[in-house]
Image (tube, rainbow, N blue to C red; front, side):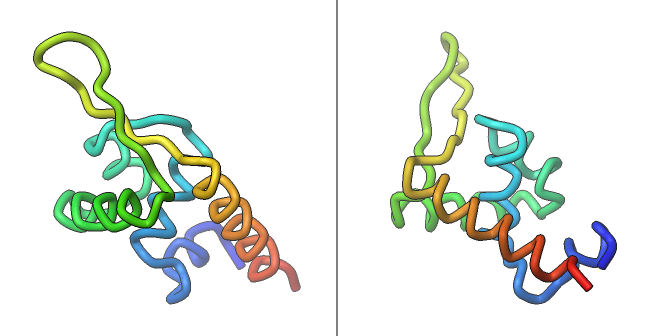
Length: 94
């Protein structure tokens, strides 16, 4: 299965795409995540809040005013993202 095909796979929800983007690229702002996960801004905002409530991502303020909010994986989020990577490898295998 090609990379592009996996990105469109029905098992890969917006939340999963956000987790995988954070695992691949480290802490990112919502705007950066929108681009790296290839999701709409409104979907990113909604799903980041759900992921934060689930304890999978955390947010931190960076810099001085105007603050930049960076999202990163929690320990639990790292484990879930690793499981998603395993699922991706399984789906891509023949």
